[in-house]
Image (cartoon, rainbow, N blue to C red; front, side, top):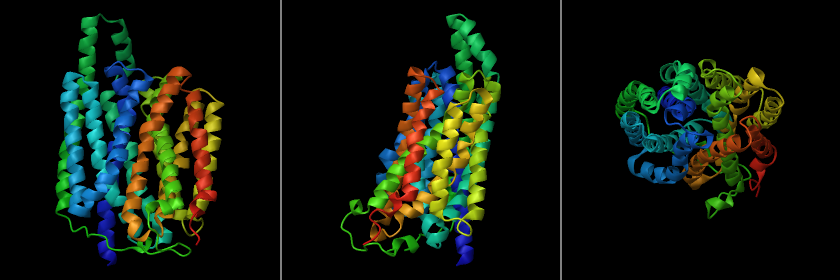
Length: 416
């Protein structure tokens, strides 16, 4: 039993690495496509919108797909869908078509919605509920490692000499400008071709693996103090509040990772240096995951960590708003530390005691990933209207809501 669980965790760890790798490429694609397709802030953040809106639209249908295919084949199908989205980047580059890039991102997000709908509840129910945050934290380490290396790899390819290229584009004639922009657009062909092949190979690996179908786990059993017989998912307010909190959390996580390169550039930092900033954010998040694995539940409870995360996020945003340059960027990068254990802590708190509603509850939490679509877009609009610096004010009420859920929100509707 234990060896089977370990094999399952190993496969899931690989999948979470894929989640992180594909997801955090957006942090490089935003400044890259802003140059290649000549966009403003708001338009460039449609990269995040197109990717994350797929979660909101596809998570509930994904639950239906999983009922038909099962978890293993559903995961393999999700990887194939992601491969299709990656494939679209090749003609999008040759045509320098921003809508086609966005379509590819939406399809990638749709595949990830299917994968995450299957994998997140699986990790939560594969063992004791009180250690669920620790297991999800281990998955977060896999995700975080991928998030660190992905922007470095893609940034080294597509943002190479970006500062001098921006100057050349601005000073050149229309004909030469078109050639330079096309040359820049073509830089994504090779990396996304390799991503396409990797996704196809991993899809086959998962399909032919012995990953078992999860049965009823601890989170499927009625928790103490929970009404076991409820007629609707809407009779679990702690789940609904958890989904709303996750919506806000994913938004701030995406903002802290995907905006930091452009924010650094707006602070006068060359892109040659700024392209490393997302990896700094993800390194802080990785540190947070490792601390969570060590501290939960032996030294700290899931709710204690969640309270601290909300307060730390508020403090770091205030420090970023009160400083400039590299120091302000450093405080935004440190948000990765505040963000790390929010997702692992909210999940087990939100789906406990749902019984037969557990799959639907998990899908609802995946829908909440749509926060990564709307909040970065709101940030981009504020950045255009006010400034990229003051636009981070948007994060303060979000972290306050995370603190509230940890303090009181997760208890609402829990007791009979």
